[in-house]
Length: 165
Image 1 (cartoon, rainbow, N blue to C red):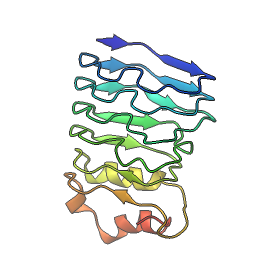
Image 2: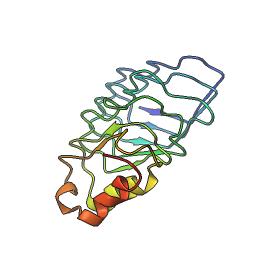
Image 3: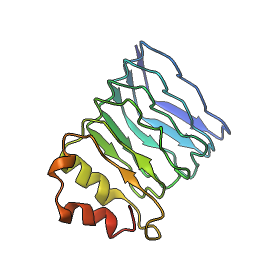
């Protein structure tokens, strides 16, 4: 039910590591150094509630990065630095209905956080973490979160002024 800290070093593909581990509830910190693919690691871990920080170092997460797809009880995801996420993360948080806090500092690719459980202040924190991108080149979708309706025009400008749609 619980995995400790995970360290991956110089592994080209870490895809599917815990994919479908339906009883996994908690994972410690994840450090993935010099890895190039991290897809579907926790895909379908329906009972996963807690995960430590995620540090991908100088590696890149490429491909269809649906790491947490189906983790419906997961409450928080905190990347140390999200610069290495290089492809749109449209499925990364699909069906993460309990997700309240997501930190993706320096994120430079589109992300969908539709239908999670984020309040206004958590969404603002997410906007503040975003990297500056060419105007309109990337999108951030936070629709259907409890805090979305409370976002002000000034709140939305945080992301828009960084080039995000």
